[in-house]
Amino acid sequence: MSLISTLARMEAVEAGRAQPLATVRHRHLAERPLVFVPLTTAGEAGAPLGALVGTDPDEPRLLVVPQPRDRDLRFAFLAELADEILPYVDSFADGVEAVEKNETDPETGKKVKVEVELCSDAPQLILPSRSGVEYVRLLGRSMRFRRTAEQDPETPFPAPPRVPLLGRWLTHFGDRARVPGSSLLLAATDLLNRHWATGQSSLEDQHLGALLAWIDVPDGESGAEAALRAELGRDAAGQLLCPPAGPATDPAFDNRLLAPAIERYDRARQALGTAQDGASADERLGELHRAEREIRRLIATQLKPTWDAVWRAVELLRELPEGARVPDRWTRDRWSFTAHRDRVTAGEPPQPRRDDAVTAARKLAAREQAQGQLEAQEALDDPLVLAGRRLTGEAFVAEVVEVTMAWTESKRPAPRPLLTVRTEDRPHLGEGVKVYRSLDGKPQTAQFAGHDDDGSMVLRILDRMGRGKEPAEGSVPEKGERLAWTLFEHEARVGAKLPDPEETPWTHGGPPRADVAELPDAVTPEDVL
Image (cartoon, rainbow, N blue to C red; front, side, top):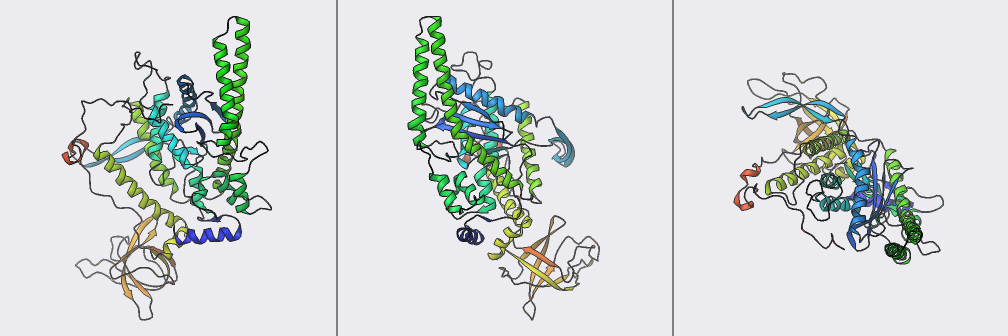
């Protein structure tokens, strides 16, 4: 936790409400996100209980599994979920724009520009909490290798037709959520925690109701009081006023309400199976429908408060202006979505259970690069984030007090102007250390050349001044300008090129075997009740 975050939390405790950690929104919010609020059976992470899903805050779709131990009912739930999510995903697949991209010519090995398709927008899924994001990843893992009757007529317990496709998409969203700065799959709690600091612990910040209580404080209360009521407040029946943000349920709800309702449903289903004539069958069918409606009503009472809380979080975040570099990161999400769309359209197999050594190394390197780039871009977009880097000596804001022109001593002299700057910050500068500032969206490099007699710093500009002997207009700061400089690079460096998977050394398992077909995931305790 940075010093700025610690100070903000202390101020939140004193003020009784959350304090801002950012002045802009550092994540993309789609105009039409899909909110997904899931619930699972207690103690069984792989057994869905219900969900609210949709793009309209006033018209959510309620999905319920009245008996989670029934495989057919679970498959019916997944089929209904696919009917909600896949049309939303497909609605972004056809809108494309033509862009130029550098690719390597296989014959010459040279970089050439080719025109490719890029989806003009991409879907966005928002879950209540981080555990919900993990649940999406688990769903994708358990669904993408399922076989349908159309694929394999002899497969036991075939899945509904579109369930494996939904598993592939949820796996992609789950993998993308691990990339820092990605916005395809988001948790509402992570979004709020990135932009506000509360007066409670990081663990308590994972409760969406308590987190919103600090940010959107009710009149006449403090954030601590409202958060305590959100966490522990119960009604006359002993049920939580603000149920957990899923996918877990409250034990009091499970024991007092849900378990008896499911038991009534089981008895009604058994009675229907033993009906002797049409009249008794109709009566018992009505009892079964009433038992199912009661389960749906109970599940809705647990999901609706969280559904409303997620949309309230979206409203609060929309009030913040979007950061200048957020669209660039969303463009990378669009490339990711387009690439997976193309893989699905081409009929490629599902994502493997386990990445080969080269693919895993590439993913890790890409995530490390994305993390460094995200931290730099957030600091450049937001003076409040930059203040935290200034406190740690990784950046400074200085006023230019003098500009002295100088050139290199070579046959073709190049400009190397010296800037005398004055700052009250204490950057960790040493001889020859490079610093960077943003010039027209690109980093300009300067080198620390020492201190002046009065203690001012001297910086030597090194690049982005054009090719002439005289610097290009606007490329050299003028006297009186106040500029932000960073000791960290604005663009993360690309690591060493990795070999192709076919050239994986034996120390890392050797090349992937093409003669071994991809098998479904092994059955685990999470998959079976």
